[in-house]
Length: 311
Image: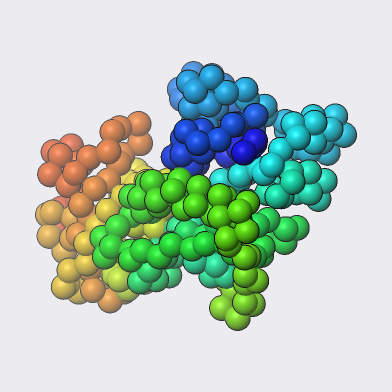
C-alpha cells in the first residue's frame, strides 16, 4: 500500500519501521525541530531522524490550515495514513483524503484514557492492565471505531518510561495487522462504547510536585507515572529533587519527614524509600550515589514551602 506516516516521539518509531519494511511510505509527517539541550539548537524529532535514516521524505507543516498543505497531502494519492502520537489535530479534509482514511495507534484500551497522556494516567490511577488500540480516526478525540486491540498487564514497579517503550515495540506489529486486515476487509471497525470513557488530560506541571500528606501507595503511582518525564519532585533546603523511583515501606511520622539517614520519607500514611533521583544539572543517580553528596539526615523535612508547611 501507499502510505503516509504521521508521528513525532520515540513511541512512534517502531511502527514506522514495521510499515516501511512492507509498504511504500510516500511521506513522513512530523513536528518541526524544537530547541533542545544546553545550546537550545533545533533538534529533529525521533521520527524525523529515523525517517531520514531510512531515506524517506519528511514534511513538517505547523498545522493543516494552509490550503497548500492540504492539497499537498491529497496529492500523495494515499491508500491510508497511519498516525502515532503526531501531536496535531487532523482536520476533516486530511482524514478523508486517503482511500482507507487515517488509522491511529493509541496507547490505551479505549474508551478508557482517550487523550494526550494515556500511559501516565493508567499508572497514576493504579490500573492493573493497559494496552494498545488501532482505530479508524474520526473528528472526535480518540473516539473512532477500533479495528484491533492488544492487552498487557502493568508491572507493579513499572514506570511510564518503561511501559511506553514496551508498548511501542508491541505497536508496530499490531498496526501492521490492523492496516492489512482493514484493507482486505478481514476486519470490521467496532464502535467504542461511551460507558467507561475517561480522558487522559495532558500532565500539568503542578501535578509533578509531591504532596507528602498523601498516602505512600498513591505517591508511588504518581512517581512511576511521571518517570522519567516530567518527573515528580520535592525539595530540601531550597534544592529541588526529582524523584524517579521510590518503594513503599512501613513507617510513620510527619508527612515529609526523613525517618532515617537513607531517604525513607514519611507520607500521610506509610512511607516511601527514594531509590532513584536527580538533582538539578546532575545525572540520574541511585540512592547510594545520591547520598554521597546529598544529605537528608533523620529528622529532615522534605517539601516544605516558605511558610514551613509540608507538601
